[in-house]
Image 1 (cartoon, one colour):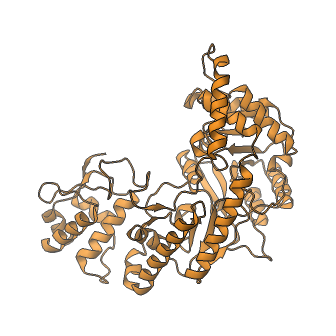
Image 2 (spheres, rainbow, N blue to C red):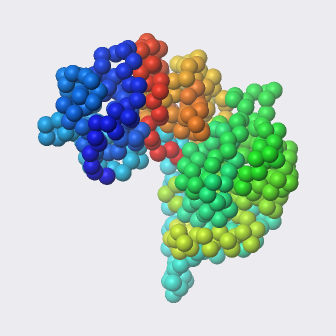
Image 3 (cartoon, helix red, strand yellow):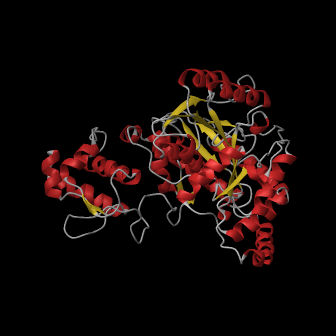
Length: 487
């Protein structure tokens, strides 16, 4: 996007920016930088001239000149001609549509919680898929419901877990996010309410808002203990009974971001309440295979045929496969297919043939992966305990991340400062509605031990800077979190 920002529009975005805690030029530069990182000032937009902005703000031109110079030095403003620099992100060689879609060079990315491919297993699956491809070449290649071999493999996997399933109950999608978008477009109209856990997966919240629906958050207990349940089922049941949401999006299996798992008793009670209230439960099972502690639960669909299940190979095998699925009754699958064909006409065939192999031998790479993740989890928990002892850390039962409660509401401030110390974060409010979770931060343990040690050191350094600079915390207090991609 290119264009220019007039002084009045920029002043409106700045709000009450001048707290007096720092020199005016520093505070002005800091707030403009946050607006660029947050996406509220688009990239490749010319800021007002120094003279015009100074007049509108009632400041000396010297103050605005110094602020612009600071932004150029930090890499958030191009040199431009005269004072008409254009907004940009450091380390970028060309404008991009939104900040945070790729981590800048030199930063360790803690916003993503994903693993590299289960290399040998994935490679072999693709090699085998190529031997099966010739049989499909005479066809057109459009598989709106998915390649039969993959649908059969997924159905058999559910059946083996105690949920009898036929291939007709499976729709193959291009990942779990694609699946959720199909479900939302089919089951929820604009302005419909969608119940979500709070916190929840940021990309799901984005999809719900993009569909024109209203997220209806129900808080999880803040930090789980031996005496508190992982989910507040009473609150969820009351919300379904009184608010009557059209659907609910839940992550009961190693919940993202907390790593919790819902008990069978809670699953049974929730499905009964959903049936009684007419709320359709949409259950994201993407992390179900990453069971670090060997907790045994039945899939949510074992308790009700009305449950819509979403799965994927992205977290367990490799996100590059872009293969997911929806399990539902056949009548719903037919509706999902009708919705899907408006969006696309099917996924790539070779990837689906490879995915069929991987689903058939789903557990093959998991033993080694789970052992590595257990070691990484212990490494991260130990580092956090040693270097950030005031952080209250919840031990996850599975999944890929640790959910941390911070001693002060400084998640956004840490996220803004972190790149100065070599890491990129997703602020706690990214996982909530209405700016919640400034007291929280999600930290993945998907990285090797040496990188986790560096990451925690960077977090400690950023926390130290905040602790030593109360004025900096005040300056950043009202900022919205920088807009970064989260996985």
